[in-house]
Image 1 (cartoon, helix red, strand yellow):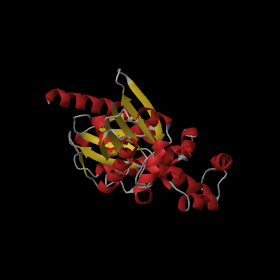
Image 2 (tube, helix red, strand yellow):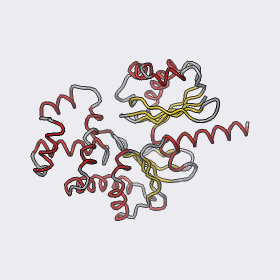
Image 3 (cartoon, helix red, strand yellow):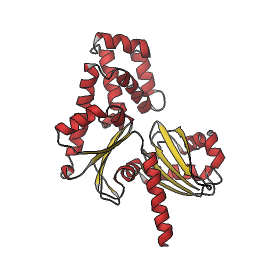
Image 4 (cartoon, helix red, strand yellow):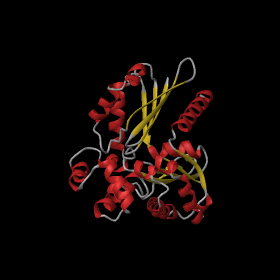
Length: 287
């Protein structure tokens, strides 16, 4: 049984092949090793009923996750998975490679993540090329859920949000400066807290304030795409909830800057699973 995972900071999507054919799909909390320890990742897995159903039957795991670009963090995730899936070979890679597999397949292209966090890479058809992005929610994450969450919170607390939205935001979240600071500096997963406010944008996406906020965020992200000299030669693919939910505005901004959009996926797990299964079947036939 092969198990494939796509993990962000908020959620991990899993698909396993079944011995009798078909697929078994489920989800767990996100398992970003930048924010979670090995023990915390193990706890997430052990507390999930779906994991327990298949843990002893899985023989291969292909895990693609946010925060897994560093060898030490990949090792932490690998160790956690090995403690739960005791009979499995475990391979851990970055979410960027997973998104490239899901969108580009074996072709060259740009692959971008716009979800809780944001990142961008060029994929040469075999591997992702390290870039200068992926600096996290404090220094980077342009146009991600964390980016927009910060913009919404500051505009609310500074009183620069339009009055009708200010009232709606207050009634929805009942927050103040002290609550925000506590969540950002004293509680775990501040990035997830910031990104949670993107739901407010979705509920009010026809408002001119939200449209302007999205346009400015996407233009910031496009500057990152434009830092790749040959970006106009390739399709630019997007994965993640922000890209998918606000794709109309994203498409407009990309068109204005001559960015050719390829796929826009809310989550890449289905395409990623199919890519891994086809690749492993091909390898098995050639061996």
